[in-house]
Length: 143
Image (cartoon, rainbow, N blue to C red; front, top):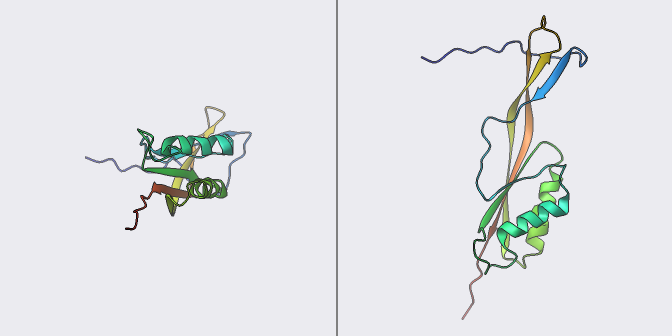
């Protein structure tokens, strides 16, 4: 039988950071395939671009190269992901195309009390997400 779970305490305003510690949780399910790349601001842009190029293979003739990769980013700024996808497309001589999808994910942040007397609080918020599919298109020769 399924449990009927109710939140411990839903927060409308932000609690005092001296009394509570914030634990930001990741979404429940993140896709994980060898062709998925998660972009974040801690890693340099050129390193992430090189990782994408390595997965795609700089040339189409490299073995074990992916025919498509998915570049994911959660939150702002999404311009970093767009920049990576456009750089890949520009350097491919029209052999790579892109398809973007945006969405909003519901995230749950947990506020843990600093003392034993307080009760934990939950804060539910929405965050923007973008997923760009970069895929290889084979060009056919005209006779």
